[in-house]
Image (cartoon, rainbow, N blue to C red; front, side, top):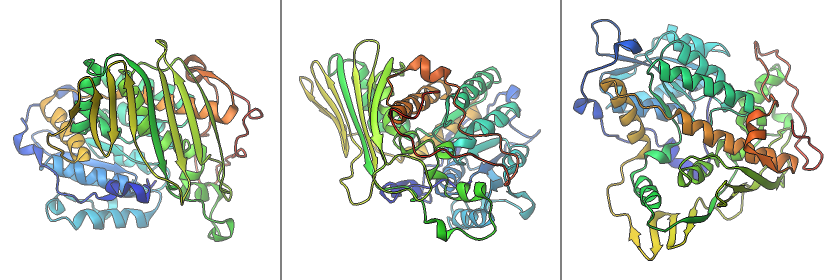
Length: 432
């Protein structure tokens, strides 16, 4: 279940960067209630579900984070993705000895995730987002510590499932770290801390952008290999189907949604409206290639987000937070202008590595790290914006949370029939 990234996000594929191996500095205390270690062993067995670029990156960062961890099992729907992933991981001599996946633990198929979960102590979930609620539920029920890529679902029923999984993870004292990687970026942590401390005064409005090229364009129908089922064709091109990816807003620009939520201390928006559509033919896919969302919070703050995935256009991924005493910005670097100007001048370690360093430290020390509540809020805020764009309705938080629209069916085999609706038409497509 390979995860893909855009050319404009090449850093996400730079998964063989040398990270800071934090395990040497970590204590070896742990919570016995988590059941994370084999008896008498300090080794952490790591499993990977989804062997695309992001999944391979997560596995590399996990192994760099903890020198006593070993990758022991992997899963994907594509055997070639597994072999490519393992070859890339073994190419790094710093973690080569930690890649210990025997042929019998290379699991292929729609049910392969469960076989990995049954094998490991720590699971990395990086399959297409539509599968995430089921995979997360299975990992929590099995008592595993979890790194889960963003977003956590593609529809509201999926979000509600994740909410229950987060609750159970807390009860079991499991660490759950979300792939909202910017939360682990030191410059942005410093910026948002200053915003929350009032350095720009009261927040009045927020404007975020994620303008880029398509992540994985839908190929023409005549390029479809003979003999594969409709579902297999969709999964191979998962980004182009709302039930699998959630749309570009929910899958990629969810990072910008998360910035808005971070500014607002993770309080959910009260309502939103949106405009969007499809400018470039999708060849059978059904996602939009652009959406602009207008969020409103209970205190009157407005948050605006522009998302686009069209080639040959202006690209940027920025944030502007306007306050009563100045403005904060993310534009290349981070800083503050106005009455209390500031520019970040501290260290800038790789945020993906920091994320896994802190994740594995939480496991080793027994100090549970759980991103569950905020990862749910940001995911639903993205879905809420998509709902508003697709239907043309004003959508409240309660409407989004209680939506009964099920995008992803129960999938039992490659022959499972999936009814993919036409690209949404605002004013025509109903809110469900």
